[in-house]
Amino acid sequence: ETGDNIQIIIQDLSKFGASGASEDEYLDSVIAGAGNQATLSNISDYEEIALGSEIYTKATLDVETAEGHVVKQAYYISVESDYVVCIAITTAAGDISEIEAYFE
Image (cartoon, rainbow, N blue to C red):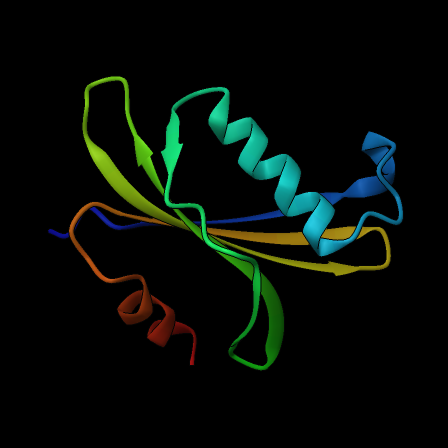
């Protein structure tokens, strides 16, 4: 048991008044929201990465939970028209790149 977690979220941005948002803008809002719930550190620069056949904008960060545990998170964002795909990977002990390999 690794404790790794993968979430895939698809949202219609037009329902939130965010039509036309870029990957960077959406990623900014995701990280800001996470920062409201936990202590964040080591936030990476945004980079483009291929997962499978799709290109995503990615950021990684460390999250300290209320219990004092530190986990590594990575967010992958792709915007198509008014829809966004957000993949969130959380790992307590694993390597994010090993988990990314499952998408190839």
